[in-house]
Image (cartoon, rainbow, N blue to C red; front, side, top):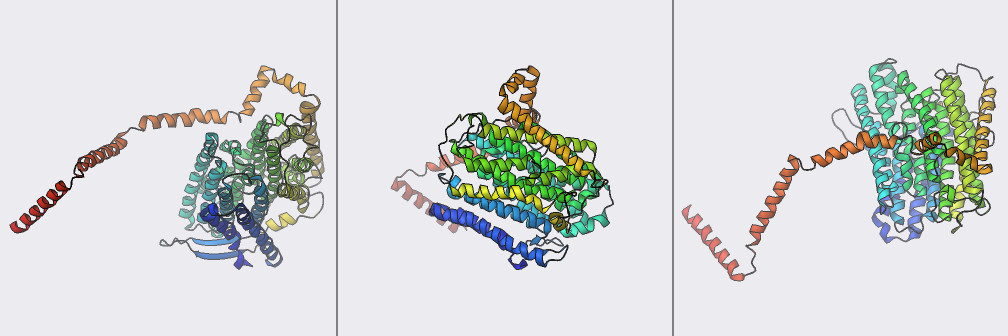
Length: 629
């Protein structure tokens, strides 16, 4: 089936080309068919190829398909080669399957938008770019997809560009992620200089024999790749673009947070795991960044009033858990949480979009309420997604994926009590802000009337995602639950697993602690935002607590710091430098050209006799010159 591999990214690419060129001339029906249909075909083909791969490929095997040689410069001849192994199969499944559900949902959600074709064209290009990123067999092709998702995020975050705020959010996302992308590009130069190739399997094979563990060059390469991952996955200190990215339509938010963009950094680190293993200090930095990010973003989510910004900070926090797992060497746990997170986060964003649409584009949770009985399908699916986000024990998929990370934070050879406590505190905060979001949105008195009820095209994707948010966790049970570990057995073909320094006998105790912490967070939010809301208002009136609340609400002041340290100085220098010598040179050329044009314009008087005299004088001059010669 490897000969069909190219069709997976080809379908959304063709959809993008058709919609970009002919979208203005197509009806909305055909735009929806092409836009959603192309990604759905990729999803179906992924199931077919994936089944073939799992049933016929030996352990450690892969599918590979070379389409053509991209360019040839001396010994450098990167190819357009697609590479499918267990790791990329998981990502391709998430991208196409969840991407297809989001596209189907978008058919109804964006039905009234004037730029229907442009929306689906950009969404298809987004899916194609992410597929190219995870299927690339070399870092140059991966970087092409990497920049593609950056471009598409700019186009889609600023989709409603008539509002200047949306344009600012798009530029902010583009510029901040460029910082990480620049570091990553330098990292590719370093890797090519060391190995003479950018082919990923070759690099992973050569690295252990070329570099010793702890080598300076390995640390440099790992740090540069990490910088790229931090930018794309919105981790500290480049996380500030993601909350503002909520300016885009809700399906865009779902696609960015669940199936594309912010998961790219997780994939990059997992794919290049050998280089990170050769630099233990960078691995610990990855774990530290993940731990700090999950905590900081969790506190910020606890203070937001915009439902989409709560989910945005939640994504930053959950990807922090993935980075923590990657730093601990718990590679399969990180990818497992990525997959489960994709299901419940897509569900939550799409359900939030349905709520916003139903309430006439109201985003403020404090102006919602009373929707439990008015929007029952949205309520139950949102509840399932929230249970998975909060890692409600036993009944939600999120419990099984997050439990692994909590256990590895304590029991792996790179784990520590501090990392475990941070992860546990993050779980408490997650349960609290998730319950707060549910209570404010669906319980209490209705503050805004429902103006629009979602149709089947919006509710069916929610039901499908809710099913996976409940039951997908059973493909990888905890160590002490049984021996069913299909997911890790699959990924062990490409990723090593961390070595535990403790047995499984103590895991039940840690699971019980996590259970108590989760229910503690739920109970706290229930008391403060439902049972006795006056208590939280009383706490807010305290000056120190109000200052802390505002600090968390502002994202811990990172935007303000960056404004002072970077934005204002750059703008100041640009204003001074806008009339420098180079500009004056160009302005001088422009002024001279304008004057010359005005002089020549006098020859165009419109008088025929002057034109004839000019021709005669010209002819006499030409004849005189010829006679003289």
